[in-house]
Length: 382
Image 1 (cartoon, one colour):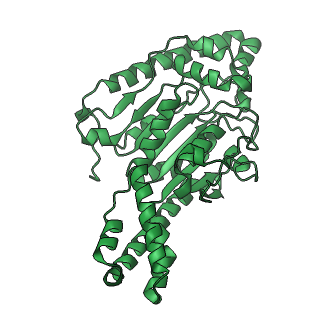
Image 2: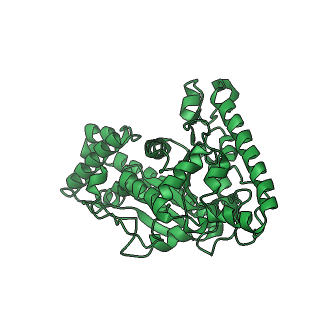
Image 3: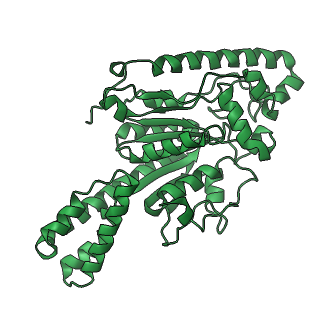
């Protein structure tokens, strides 16, 4: 569906002014909302997401929009996997019932629906038209088999299942569930709105909080590094992984969302989201996203297993080498400046370690981007 058809999408959801999370949700709604099911972990996104009428989730001019539900930190990933399993069951049921009516509907109608590719949006649009035509045909028929098929006919269109939450959920409390879903091999998409802190509960440190940042429970600066969830997911070999930042490269963000949704398997998108807890001028949040990428703090990348199956390097490094020192990026955020004001010696020590970590990770990513396909795990499901 073209973004212009989503005229009801709220431009002012009930989040903090300038929130870095909501643009990703609006983009997702515009791309896939007409056939999406969303499991939303408790947190900022569940608060402004469920606060009608000002929400980034919306219906399009046809009245179609995401089916949204909220679950807790500790079980949202499992809840979302359950939505996927239910959707798969409904689809299998619909296909069986369609096959049972083959004599009445005709081979051409049944085969066109059952054999239709449903990977890209153009193909999905054609399938929706077929399903609408099928429902119109069923309205002219009677009988128990007709009623059975009518009740599940919409499930002949591929359902897009998304599990959404923040870094407190994905990196910490719900991390085991996220790992379980990625390891399942199921066609589920996970979107992590990464603010690098527990935003909704006052700004506590999470496992996503970077080295040297000040937060609740890290008042003297966090002394452990940020967990690299992207590398953990890549290790499976059959998970689509992307690290995006809309303020740095909106086209890369759009490409990652489309590739993740089209991929027949688990996908993980880590979306850099500036936050009021960072202590920045929120009107310049996208500029700070650009600085995060430019300093190497948040390198943009995609890992696409489809490329590995075609004997190409699946690891794509989408941002250039760091062009500014980490110090310049951090100087614009209060979460780092606070430590520099209160304990300059410790701040300098942690900053030097942070710069070393940036250099190390970039060297590792760059080496991966130059490998041959055979040096990455294959997708054994294929």
